[in-house]
Structures are given as C-alpha cells and as structure tokens.
Amino acid sequence: MSYVWLLLGLGLIFLAAEVFTNAIEWFGKRLSISEGAVGSVLAAVGTALPETSVAVVAIVKGGEHAHEVGVGAILGAPMMLSTLAMFMTGMAVLVFAGMGLRTTQISANYKVVGRDLRSFVLVYMLALIAGLIGFRTGKLAIAIVLIFIYAAYVYKTFAHGAEADDDEMRPLHICPNAEVPRLRWVLVQLLSGVALMLFGADILVENVKIVAEHIGISALVLSVIIVPIATELPEKFNSITWMRHKKDTLALGNVTGAMVFQSSLLPAIGIIATPWHLEPRAAAAIVVALVASFLFSVEMLIRKRLSPYVLLAGGLLYALYPIFVFWVLPNMEAR
Image 1: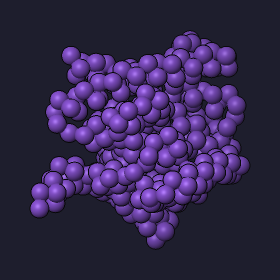
Image 2 (image 1 turned 30 degrees about the vertical axis):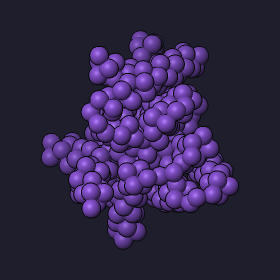
Image 3 (image 1 turned 90 degrees about the vertical axis):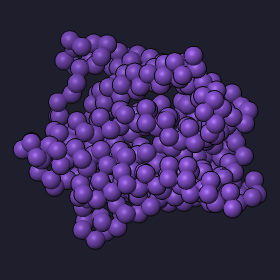
C-alpha cells in the first residue's frame, strides 16, 4: 500500500507543479518581467518548488530517515537538472531540427546562461565544502554566504535581463477563456499550487521512508533518484516546448536558473536545519552535477555557445551516479 501512496504523492506534486508553473508564467507576463528573468528566476523557482516542498516537509518532520529524504531531495534536483534535464533539452533540439521546425543551433542569451552556470558551480562547491568540514560554525557561515550569493544573482538577473516580449501564452488553467487573466486569479492559482505541493510532499515523505526500508536501500539514495525524476518533469517538458518554439533563452534559463536556486537556497536550508554531513552517496550527487556543469561551461568558454551534442553528454554523466552507488561503492565497502 505504501507504493500506492508514494505514487499518489508524486502525482499530486506533479499536478501542483503544472498548476504553479502555468501561473508563474502569467505572473511574470502581467508584471512585464524580462524573458531572461522569467526563465532563470520565476519559472525556475516555480518548477523547483516540488523539491523544495519535499525537502522542507521532511526537515520539519524531523528524525534520521526524514532528514535523509530531505537531503536526498535537495541533492537530487541539481544532479537531475544538470544531467538528464540538459540531455532532454539537447535531444529536443535535434528532434525538432530533424523535423524541420528549427535549426540545431541554440540561439540563447548566453550572458544569462553563463551567469547561471558560473553561479551554480560556485555555490554548489561551497555546499560540498560545508558537507565535508567538521565544525558547525563554518557550515553556518557557508549557509549565510549561499543566501547572499543567490540574492545577488536574482538582483543581477532582474537588473540586466532583456525586455519582456509578446510571446504566445498558454491560457491560465482556472480562467481558460480569459485572453489576459486578472492578477488576482493568477495569485489564486499560484497559492493553490503551493498548497497542493505541500500536501503531496507530506504523503511522499512518509512513504519514501517505508518503501526505502522495504527494498533495502537508504532513504537518501531513493530520494536522490525518484523525487527529481517525478518533480523535474515540468522543467523538462517546459524546456522541450520552448525549444520547439525557438525560445532558447527560456528553455535553458528554466533549467540553469533552477540549478542555481536548488544549489544555493535549498542547501542553505539543509545546512541550517540538519547536521549536513555528506557521506559518499550524498557527495557523489554533488560531484556528478559539478562535472556536468564544468563540461558545459568549458564549451561556452571555448565556443561561446552550447551545442545540443554536448547537452546529450548529460545523460551519460547521470548514469555515473547509480553505477557508483549500486556497484562501485558496495565493492569498495566490502574490501
């Protein structure tokens, strides 16, 4: 029965993410916020809320297993975004180019994307260092730095983004017939999405612990793998849709912006609210994400752009985590 409740929690979170993401796009539109800011901040934070809700609910519940679920949700999301989400985005470019709907060249605002990737590498390296050092004061100092870095990132994104455009918008779900919905209905849908996420997260956290014990793996590993697979689907589908319509800045910014959010504010919450001692299974998730981001950053440095073929490498890098966790590490521990 726990498996059924687990799927129900994931389903509710997925539904809530769609409701929230649709509303956050309209929120940015109504306030005339730039495309870069909508992609890297509003849409990214909106689609990151499922993982945030799982982590926060798990930490509030307390207990060793709940903390493992929370830390797993925090660490799994950046790894998923920097690997599988990038793989899906690159694949979408190649598929749509093959259909004659676009070219294989990704024409994005690389100032926005580059700022995202540089910020991600910086803050996630700090989060890794915080998990490896032994003194609490140092961990808390890093948490404060992470919060300030994200605040500076948001300021720069809003201050230097491009002007808002008039791209076609999907109707607001609760006002499907309104060409331009009123702001109050946008806010109602936003808050409804948050409430539904929290409800689904509560169900998920309780049953991840039970399922992990039943199949004999740690709650952290299960959370790293299954929570992002379900909750990152909005990122992947939004980016695929935006690539189809040649909105490359939104497509990439939606992923890279979420990476910055989830590698700064969420680890800061984890550092403050948990011991934040990263054992090898946890540290490996950070290392995989950093390797992927370093690869993308190198191509941008050399070629001044990203190609879909390099993005495809994210899928191969993601495979390194289960190989390490389920094969390499057990063999090392058995020696």
